[in-house]
Length: 68
Picture (cartoon, rainbow, N blue to C red):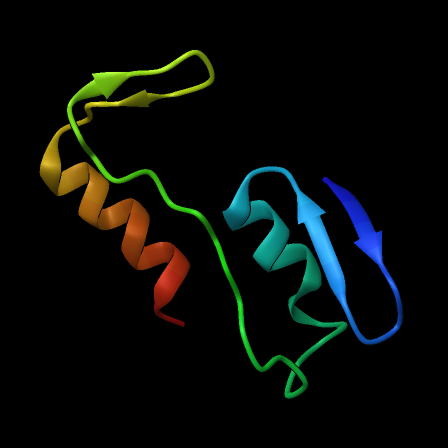
């Protein structure tokens, strides 16, 4: 994960689940908004990821990122 930002703004480039977990302790109670740019499960294959996974697996992946 690569972090970019100032004291009030941080952008992380990497797997969103790993980034969320890495930043969790440092920013607990301070985060107002998170943009995770998830895969939309369109059924298509892209250069950097496969967007056609089994729907139940996709739901599990999304849940890990959205529910604590």
